[in-house]
Image (tube, rainbow, N blue to C red; front, side, top):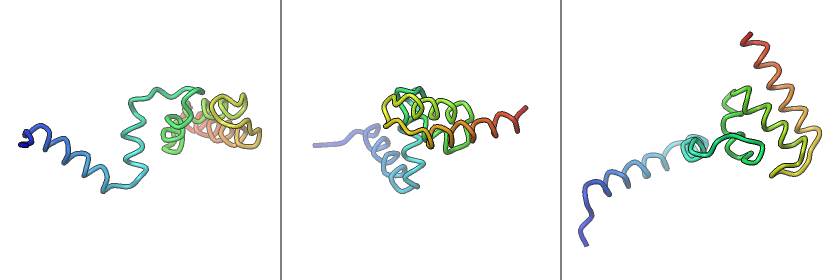
Amino acid sequence: MQTGTTTKALLGIIALLGLGSPQAGMAFQEESIPCSQYSPDACRVQAEAGDAEAQAILGLAYDTGQAVPEDDAEAMRWYRTSEDRFQRSA
């Protein structure tokens, strides 16, 4: 079976992504999923990259137990991180 040029190019891109850091590959994959308290994995990638809004949303997810175990300490950690980011950008 012959593989087309487009298929080879896509396989090459996938291979290159696999050679990078796991975080880079996850960020690429998670960008297509909007960050919300119902998709904490998508928010986590953005939050760890310093996105204050994603940090606040992740805090809300832990605060309410939406799609993650309810964890007050983790919620406060993300809320504080988000607040610090918002204050620095103001």
